[in-house]
Amino acid sequence: MIVKHYLEVKEEIPQLPGAQATLRWLISKNDGAKNFALRLFEIKHKGEKIPLHNHHFEHEVFVIEGNGKVKNNDTEYDVEVGNAIFILPDEPHSFINNGDTPFRFICVVPIL
Image (tube, rainbow, N blue to C red):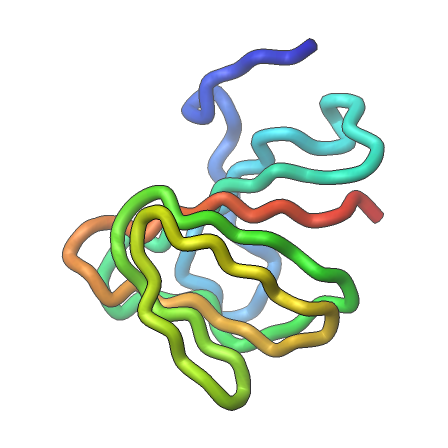
């Protein structure tokens, strides 16, 4: 078993051009996880974003702080603390902080 505080995990910049966010790999293959990675994203300031992009795998998101918008090609959703989001494989999506506090969310993805 591994127990750690999120602040013990290095904050990184996502490898996505135009991303205005930070990322912490809370649980990853480096911890011995074989199936899923648990990540924490933070978009610190109002108007900052993770631009529209897609992946060939699904992922699940849970908002833990702040307010934001999640977009796909067709729809924009306002999201807040407590919202869960399911993103289908190959679905274009983006995240935008539209509040006055950091927008933070947990994201689970498969380990490839």
